[in-house]
Image 1 (cartoon, rainbow, N blue to C red):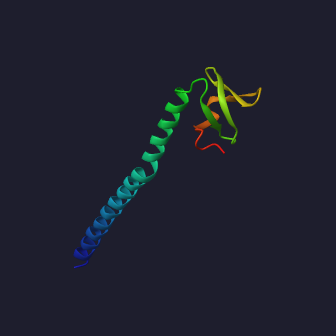
Image 2 (image 1 turned 180 degrees about the vertical axis):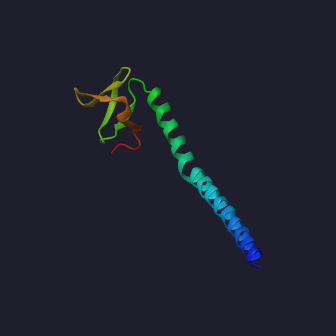
Image 3 (image 1 turned 30 degrees about the vertical axis):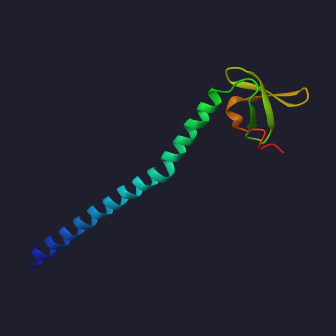
Length: 104
């Protein structure tokens, strides 16, 4: 009798562990769909934008500096900020472009 009770408890324990692993796998699947996948897509779009920069593009840096691309090198970009003021920034610090319709 004791042996049957122990076998039944072990079977219930294994069933509980199986549903636990299913829930963990589902949790990781949901996290991938709603967090990791969109972040990767956004990162690829940003890399594409940075690789397609050209002279005359209006850009914004990560620090919030607005400027116009004047020169592009392998790892850096020279942006014209105001008049003849130019800043050399790392290419990775450029986060987006802006158009005349967004400018105030």
